[in-house]
Length: 630
Image 1: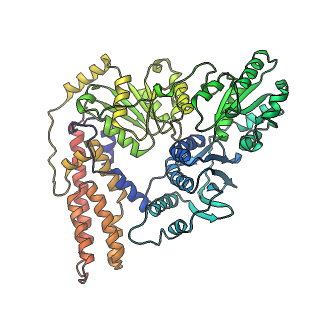
Image 2: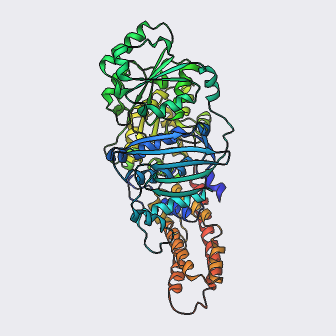
């Protein structure tokens, strides 16, 4: 069955599409994902990913809450952690985001700190804290009692249980510490896996920067202490100067290799001074400017005139490594592509749709080959639901490297890509694509939760044409296609060939008393989407026969009732009619006060029903394969 599905994934045929692309669906992938989390059956990736990419995404995810509570955010990443770590960035993000949001909600006008350290070579420790506020006793009690609570849990408890289950499935641990002296800490530990690719430039930079001097100009040492700690890690000699002294003395910057200053401290007079110094400097001197998270774009644009490189708070060691490598190893003049002249408008780069596309709208792009690079299964499924229209062929990749391999073998008309992915991220992938002359005009659209101007600028500099925001909507995807996907003779020829090869459509005639395929296809948004959901559900329920058998034999009736509810949710989600009825019966039977004499008969019945269901799914798979073009 899996081979059939793998082959079918190559085709984007979907005759059963609804007229509206945004039809509400009730076959919900989240039901399956929640079951995976509850039973610790989630698939954990162990791929190297860029830590700074994860932290940038987190900043965007919690940015609204940070601004509302007027907090400052700090990422304290210990040097030994490295620029890349190995693990599942998607699930790590799902753990950290709700914990940080909880910490933010505790008070106002304070600090939120995420410290990331390595304990020997055994574990990575994420310590998320609000050091100036302890959790109220009532809230702390909710967390303490989350796992002991039976029946209805609060939203806080449900979120905490979900996070703990993901942590445990990853082989890690999660601890809550609460003290009026040290505030509130969520401590998340994961096993450390070495990045054998060793993508860091730290050792090379230490040699290159040995003996070089950096001057930090600020109002107080506290404002830049974290940045100083990071720069010091690369072997630089650090000196401090108060902005008041700088104003009075106008020191000779010629004895320094670089200066670091916050844009919030700069005036027009300071900018004039640095412009003159740049014009008359006798040696290679770099000015690095640090911007605040919610700084006004006008101030950022004003300071671009004198910046050799720019950083954005919270300062991250990976970003510092990147700019130092660009300036002192690669000798780049415009670090991270930030021009000292161009004023970039991020609003023109972001694509925003204004209406729901119809099936007819999407069919305008018949014959198109569209590729999507996305490591999140949920987001990939959303993209499939939107793009998987008859006549459009969809190619999917889990990371940038896989997508480049697709480009080498297939004619692709447009690419959608996530930014933060394992193995190769979206920015690196785009830069590599743009080095090939044959791909220089290929439209590349980022799918990103990153929304700050400097992050969007980095996408544009890498070679992307535009971005759409997460959560993904059909409106934004259609707007991107309308703007960038040009109808070419090659697309028209492909669709004409599809018409010639297309057989007369037939309706699948299966046993709807076992599996209601028509309803499943309608609610999943298409035949391939439904088949994928069927296969994933059957895979995650492998071994459920033994679970049922053990619960019945051991007389664990409370657990059996809970198990039955889970099975009802999963099987009704894929419209497995016979299975849903079976577990409804079991649930009702267990709830009665009668003797459970006949309960054991359900063990054999479940095995038979599963065989019926597997046969029906295989029959549906073969039908789809017969309908696919050769």
